[in-house]
Length: 216
Image 1 (tube, rainbow, N blue to C red):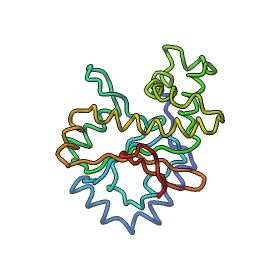
Image 2 (cartoon, rainbow, N blue to C red; image 1 turned 135 degrees about the vertical axis):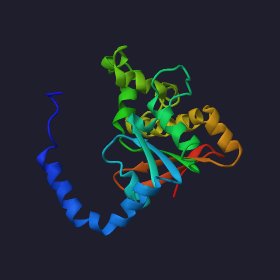
Image 3 (tube, rainbow, N blue to C red; image 1 turned 90 degrees about the horizontal axis):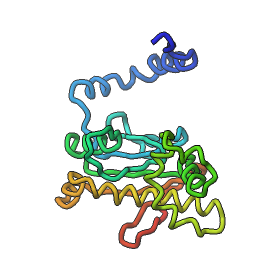
Image 4 (spheres, rainbow, N blue to C red; image 1 turned 180 degrees about the vertical axis):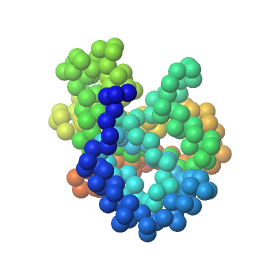
């Protein structure tokens, strides 16, 4: 563990500033969370992208959203094979333990993971096709959506379309989790698909009845 270093100076300075200036105002709230535990109403599955400000756009306080982030905000198919499944485990915990009422799959514009999938599926990123590529094998979840966007003429249209396909695929995959399907059938849980333009922060929501995204 000798390779593990102490916190970078700029992060230490920001922590010290936060602890002295912001924390005292919210001390009681943090103590309440520590004593009573978390009880978020919603889970958000978002991208790892540092530009996606999940809690900021919804104006949530700490403890009000259960957030899981991964590359390209994907939910893989339900696969009870005894192996490690970080996203599936987070979903299971949110639904069966925290009893969240909503799961939001939140995608975004100019997603690097989606771009990687486009390049991989078009043969322009052979490094992602290698069996040992962890990123490539994760992006295999998105491969079914590629066939539905490959004929779009403009690269930017293919990018946006595949970002939205990933959200739809993830919502479909969620319904393959038995505990999710049961909660939805019993009206204890609702699923939502969101896509945001990170430049303008416009939000589009997936309308399951007509199977496309609408603004607002």
